[in-house]
Image (cartoon, rainbow, N blue to C red; front, side, top):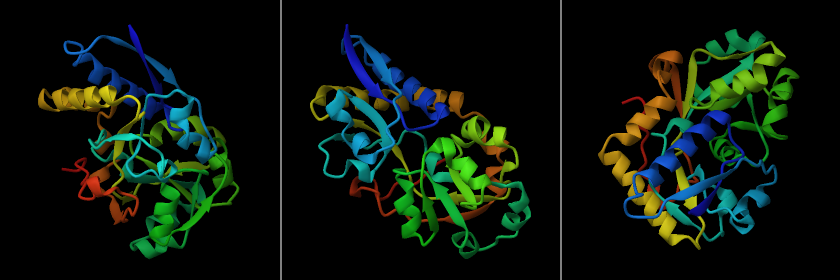
Length: 264
């Protein structure tokens, strides 16, 4: 049996679990045309952007990242341009200090939010995106200390994807006390997640694309998506929030017309 090395670090546990399930499903539905393989999962975090960009040099065969991730600029790779989460990661909810809840609830224009300081860990791809949209960015540290910095007023809020915010909040923010998921605002920017494949594994890239095509045609994709993202619309009242839309200058040309389908 062959092996596939899947690097799945630098992200929330919720995202990791879904992405593993989706990858394994892509492989499973193509077993009739290809030999069975074992998926070896590496959840190592790389706080240095250059280390993440060189992930294929360390033996990784495949990973999931945002389309156009600047950490992979100039890196030879095979991109499978099929969105994996209906644009979920681009719908961003905020975590703020409890004392600031009433202030954020009063915001009716994007300018009000741009004047607040958003905290983003070092190397995250969306730091450049927020700067491009004239947001005040404090890019520092890692995810583990992000919420202590928020509590200490080094920044004013954190914005996380609706598919990861609950998991991250429970793990890192809730134990500190005094921080909450803000209930009235939501940001959106096109931020599709896609598979990147080691350029030396073109057969794997072809197989994963075939698997995604099969899952889309048979509703297998929707079944997996719903299993891991059930009731997000209701849980976070997404359709009734004030929505601020940002542009994403990082999108590759192949996905320039990407549109999220979560709220359809």
